[in-house]
Length: 279
Length: 131
Figure 1 (cartoon, each protein chain N blue to C red):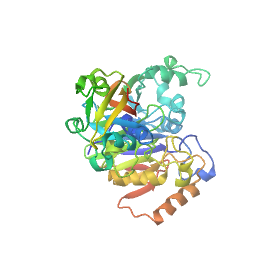
Figure 2: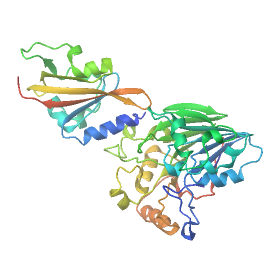
Figure 3: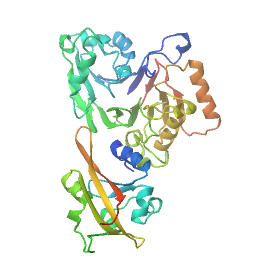
Figure 4: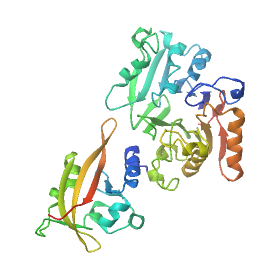
């Protein structure tokens, strides 16, 4: 299973020289296994992914964790959606009141976007998800609602013996009065437990988080505590704040690790990075 | 160890932050959490008991009517909510673990997650003035 980061910035695309290393595109991650192509989120990073995809691909799956704009803003610029020879499956969270198709149409319609979904050469196939488990090719997806405003899912992606969890928007400490000591009462624990690789929201510094409780995102410190609780093998911090430059991000992690001992690998997600997990 | 659904995790967070007594139960009626305000009604401490099976906590307090006659479980708001998955409300007397007789009012409502998952119920308790 190969996992490639096409965007790991949170909230807002952040172009500029001070963001060159970790990248400015919003959430988009590609998961490849043999001929299976799964894309997690359609943030601005999906535009570049569409340019560099294999030319012979004829089917792909886009799994949206939620419909906040930074996770959907790139969809209209994703070239395979305009190729009638490519079958695109669009998966997203159930809301309980309005069908996913209707909610997607809000983006694919004026004044937000000039092209409507039914004007695409081939209408994407829409799938709704809640707490579910399903297979795409040889890859198993386990989806679970997470602590974040509006219906928001996290994914556990399993292929053979390898497992990867994707939680780009997750305020893990909010619902757990005794965080990080009660796995049963910790949002996201079931899908992150023992994974080989975890991409997790780490938008804020600890001091920033104090004034942003309830906004749906985690501090870097809480992401690391969560990964420790879940006994992951590698934590890649994701959803970088748009105001955090490369220098600031590196400084935050280095400062935190000065006083923390971890028995697993911790890195900052970088746009363009690929991770290979053995089968 | 499994993980509770996010709706129950957030319900517990809500209960934990309230100054009124709150019980949180799963669909089978097992008491998943009760807050500090509820501890004085039960006469127990959550930090000591943790979650309790329905068979365990149902015997902790004895609901009665004004004349001291025992109430059947079907007459209790939380049991009605668990049975019908609808809100219920009522007042009755209890003898709690600390040996006190209290007159309480209870409002119970089901917890239904997206898109349509019945996950349990929450009950809010008030110590009411005696009839």
